[in-house]
Structures are given as C-alpha cells and as structure tokens.
Image (cartoon, rainbow, N blue to C red; front, side, top):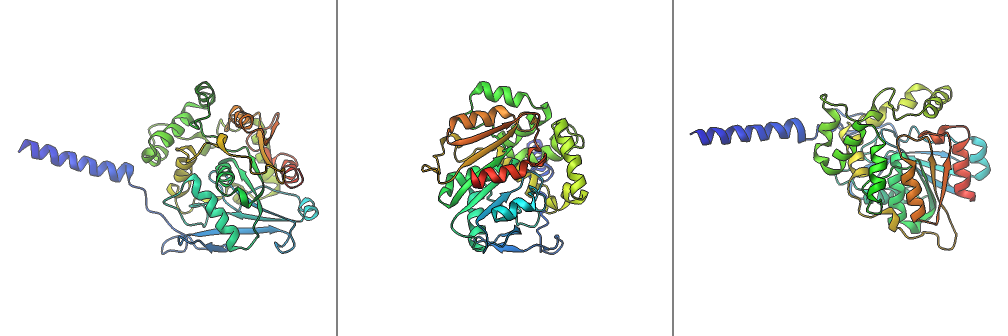
Length: 344
C-alpha cells in the first residue's frame, strides 16, 4: 500500500512539474480567436505558416539593390535600421523587413532552427518576386539568420552584412580559453541564461519566468549590458521616432515562449554547422560579406566576432571604437553599413 501511495505521489509531482515548469504556455497566434489581429501584409509559406513583412525604399520594380533585413532579439520588422532617404534614393534601394518566426505578426515555427531561417527568407523573397539575387542584413540576434543564408542559400545572395551579430560560445571552432574569457565577461545571470538555453533548453522558459533568481538582464530596465554609448544612442532614437516604436510592444504579442524563448534556444543551441567552416560565397569578388562590431559592446563580446573573421579571411571585418551594441543607431552608421554592402 505504501509503495502505491509513493508511486501515486511521484506521478502527481511529475505531472505538476510538467504543467508548472515544462509545458509551454498557450500561444496567442495572430488572426486566431483570442489572438492579436493581423494588421500587416503577410505571405503564406509552403508549410502553412505566415510571415508578416514591410516594404520600404524605392519600388522593387525600379530598384537596383534589393535588401532583406532581419531584426534582433525582442524586436520586429517595425523597428529596424534607419537609413537616410537620400542614400536610399541615390543607391536605388528596395528594403524588405519581416517578423522572424513567432515575433510580431509572423506565425510561430515549432520546428524552428538556424537552418530554417534561410529557407524562410528564400521563400519570402520568392513569394514577393524580388528576384533571384538579394542582399541580407542581420542585426544582433538576426545575425544567425545571415549565417544560415551564407551556409544554405549562398547562390541567392548579392552580399551580406552582420551587424553586432550574435555569437554562439559553443561553436566548435571557439577555443576553450576564448569561450571562458568571453562568457565569463558577462554578468553571472546572463551566463546562466545562455547556459540554460544551450544545455537544458526545455528549462529555459521556466528560467526566464521564475522569480527566485535574476534571469536575463537585457530584458530589465537599465541593463548593465548597455554601455554609455548605447544609452546615448537610445536617447537619440527617441528624438527621431516615438517611444512605442522603440519599445516595440507588438514584437512579443504572441507570447514570450514563441518569440524570446525559441529565439534564445535556437541562437545558443547546437547549430547544424560552424560559421568558421562556411565557404566563400563570392570567390570571384562578385559580392562581399561584412561584420560590424563595436568595441564597447557588452552584449556581444568583440573577441568572438574578431575570432570568426580571422577564420574567414573573405569576411570584411569592421571594428569601431567607443561604440556599443547600438552601433547602427549612432550617427550615420546605418548609411555607412548600407553603402559598404552595395558598393564595397
């Protein structure tokens, strides 16, 4: 009898743990009953999911350069790089931004991976008929989307720019000493968040939502991960665009699990490839690949992007002093990034 009671208690505890810790929260998918409304144009992918997008710049029919932009962590298509109209017009640039899976108004992808990013981008380009070749720009967490494109669809690319791109401390090419140095430079709570996302991804949603320990400081006001340069850039942004757009409230409207949690698990999980093993997509210099990194970036340790660029001599690596993670929003840096990509 005692054994039966013990087994019953154990089963109850397992059931409670699953519901309380492991079971994903309900998803509020856009366009479904009880979910947020669909207010943006969307394309339907071959697997039935939708991607929401935004078009800017010159009409694609008239464009000389067509560029797809991938947003960062906790962001969406509605908050991206800010280019001057003069540069857009002079270069004849068409810009296509989209909500990555689970963000904004794009459907979640339960099978999301680094690899799936490239094929989402390729199908989006084909559905919108922007042509066989296009440029890609990935900002911060959107950097792994660019690596995916360089690995899986290099034949579709005219060029690529990775702006303060995410780095995975567990890439095989990262030496143990560099892994320890760079991960150890982050606040302890952020080290733990990344380790949980990598080693026990099934626990990451609980880790992000639990109240016993600090989880991920980048989600907190006045995060220590933002440098003085970042704070200054943020103030400048507020003088250009309104607070709602900067804070991007719609980015997480389908739930943090489908946006923040899946993004972290994908970015810091086990990749299907190591960027250091990617072949030069432009052996005849018909295009170029750029990495832009601020030396004052406390979110992405510059040593890792410097290491990757040394492994890939065909990458044009740009380091900027006294600039943090919001590098693209300081001065005219966005315009410089764009010009280097299409003219360099």
